[in-house]
Length: 290
Length: 269
Image 1 (cartoon, rainbow over the protein chains, first blue to last red):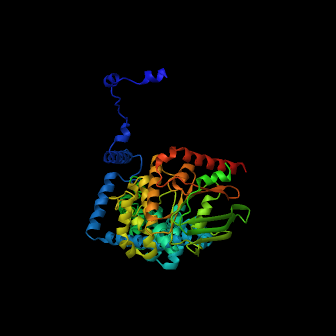
Image 2: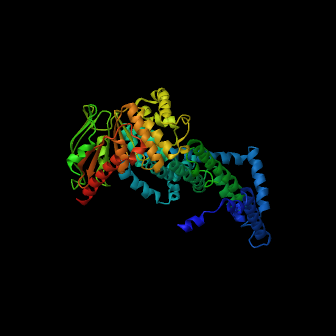
Image 3: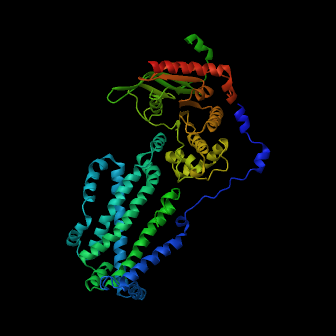
């Protein structure tokens, strides 16, 4: 008991005692602002690239210098801005990506609802989807060309084919995301199956659905370009293939960089939609995405 | 304590029967697991009844059968003269979790049962009533706030409003405040009592807490496990309105002890 009494400090002690203010240490590397970190990595990357090429470690036919690539990017940029033949090619690829993605969303979402909402879909359709998903989908490209020809249809088909599966999986997983309480609550409110799906399961599953869409957005680009590589046509992929066959590596590099901008726009539009639609689920977007 | 002693707690019989459960049984897994056996129970208008028992005694099963969420294996459930054969509009339910939907504001969450039942236009019309209910539970000013900005206790208050908006004849409460801290829990229990009194609601509460059951209830159904059967229905005749300081009175302590004795006996069997 006496120990307890001794423990309680007098007011005087409390006044004269020093504050226990201390600083939490954050390591230098974690406190660097984003713009600086990104610039740093960019400079190191380009610097390494420049030194590898200017020291003659790699043949310029295999790897152009950053400067050559920049020059070619300016050339390609001028062609695009002045409505040259490259703009036409880019527009074809963009159309393939948009149509392919729209098709993938329509099919993927429908199949996802079938698989995620109905016992029949889960029992009868899911095993086949898994089986097809494990196949190397690019190998279907010659088939699509044989079926749909050398036009944009075969590229749209391959792009959609690749992007569909993640959307199916995301949608099905999303529909299973609602917890038991929410299901029971809707049951007690006498909600129909359709009401439960639209008013509860789908909104609850939006984060997962968007995860599927983001994976699909990346896949659709890969599908369109692979389709152009293997099935010809007049898109950007064909320009890359021709440039590569002429060993015009600076052109290959600059075309890829422009293409990545298209991919970024597609991806960013999905993220933007997610932010607008799934406003309550903020931790899912942001940091992880860019 | 014998049966005669139990009568000491006998509360006055209240209104007309609302819920009638007759010879109710539920078995699972091809009749191998008997969850409930021969449950007979009558809930009267305006009464507050709790069911208490150890885990696995069939409390939740009983509540789900009463709510029309799962069918019984044998027996009858009659609510307001009509058999319960599925979810009903005259039943309001509340769960351990508030389960508010994050894409709807507090008031939209509260009018959700109306939206489901009668559509969006009707839900809009019920907004005024939702505001009144929010006022009753002390959430005035939080109408257009999203659930992630509400504390656990506030969310449960909102879910009380959601349960009440359809003016249900009975309230089925599945451990509604067990996820809250003890202080909020006591406060919410008093709130619940007041609301039940104001709305003249018939309430049925599933709980693990003997104190909670005693402070709220007119009758306490003590279940013993495996198979779930009614050990005894204990009447609580503490005066109303109940206050938290009643929990320190000898009478309260005696009822709690008596119920604990019943539960211990159930465990031994």
